[in-house]
Length: 187
Image 1 (cartoon, rainbow, N blue to C red):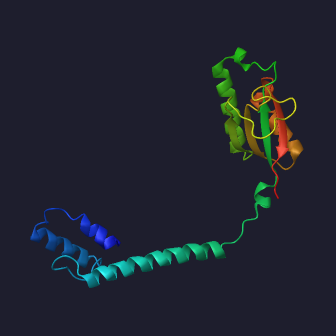
Image 2 (cartoon, rainbow, N blue to C red):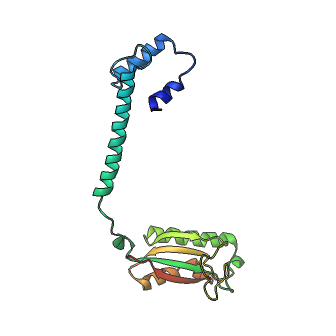
Image 3 (cartoon, rainbow, N blue to C red):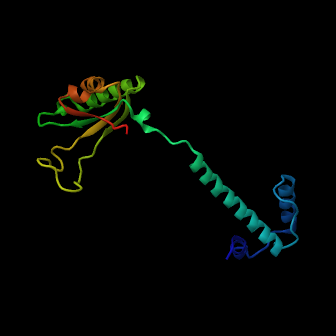
């Protein structure tokens, strides 16, 4: 079943009034959307013409997509990722920022995040959920929760020492948290 047959099968039980039909086709013709008003249901030649038109448009879209994929320049991510570091945040046993109050924590992290983003250094700041699952063999000495990172920052810095300075200035360190800094591989 082609598209025209499907559309024909859902025709309304009652045809629209002749004046409305004529007015609609005049407007469509005046806007350049159609060439002439049909006198009744579309003929087989008009149906096949519209089907051919639809197939030609679909083929054009496929060719444009494939052509764009083939001719698109390849992206060299090494430049985009150079100088990008992940800072994984850990909560050691003595980490207890709640003694300062939730509002102080929210303000401290929010101010720091805003400042680092404005400076162009902070790309991502996320708190990680507590639920986790290992995939593959467990790492020696690690558990699902105790050693899991509690959050992460993705930062831009010229080198790992500059990334360390960003991590040291974060509220996480100020409130007693630990961080692990790793460069994001650029190749």
